[in-house]
Image (tube, rainbow, N blue to C red):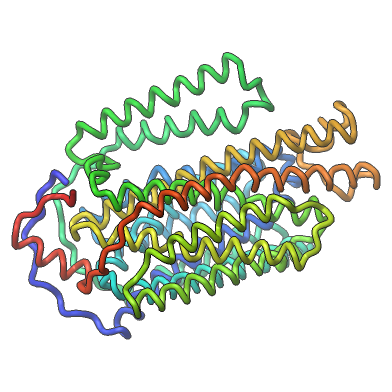
Length: 525
């Protein structure tokens, strides 16, 4: 990093396990809010989009809008943490989440809903960037596995509770889907209070300049390419002037972003951090994991409800095997890593198991028995649980303390970017395949009215024969989504193989920062 650190205070005394858990309570509550809001909405989206008369593209963009806003703002939150109190910033991000949730709950159109998801995404960007930076500041890498397992458990509980709560709310006539957004508000307010009471961090300020131009160019370039991926094949042909315009604009904007990032004093994405081999490889792996995981799993709820004809409540219950697999694997892996200090084996195993899970889910259809579907989902969850959090651990362990925020933000940025790309790209695959399957079963005119890339069908309003065709179409299309996503999971495994395992450090980020500030340092090679 180009900016110099101000003289740091003496190394703070090591925190006891009880003090760390108390300090993390507000962080975990905040992350629970973000996870709960996301999973509640994911399960309710088929009903929401139907009620608001949205399309398959709208379904995709309600998810993508939050991911894109989170992706673009993660580096900004990371830079702000170098200037201001991290606790205050996390509280502000939770406040943004509350505002977005209230706007979403009162939405009367898909457009307003998407805008509210952008606001939620900005808040989620703060939580994503700052929670892991704070953890790395107070916990040594050797101990991070244990506490990452606790975060994994919170993640799993939020993910399990979300679909179940969302299903019950949607199926309860006097509540409805709007309460899927309202219900997170009191939890967010509780998290703000807990953070105020439990989190106490010294503020080590750095003289930095926030690269707003770079952030704008990155967001604009990625948005142009995502628009092309989402709309091509449905609103216009893949080979058309619209494709040429969007692709050209996206490429030019991203090239300009790279030029800006290479010249400014404090870039949003510091390019020199990629000289560190571990950071470079974990970044690529995080991008690929985001594409495979988000792009594949976000459409499972739609598959449960449309292809299998289940209610939102039952759809929430059907997602339990994947979440339980994730919870068990991330918790067990964290405990073993803390005890042994060895972590690369879990990255490799996670890559293998995640790829297998994606491949198995590529075989599903409307007649897949639930016990087999549950097994496939559990395999995917186990793989993701071993891989995702430990990529962050590997990167944080191999950079100077002064670069912890940058390294964590970069990984979060590219994982979210992969999720946005995966959701848009695989959502386009789903829409295209549904349209093709409906044209086979219903004919061109009927298909246009039955779903595909246009309105998502209301199964209760369809005759029996048409309903069966729609169910088959979504079943085959969802399997194709996992088939397309599987190679990205395999590429993540290949990248992980080249990461060199290094001993985990035994000092917290604050202790390392105090030590490093007393002597000049250069970025890791």
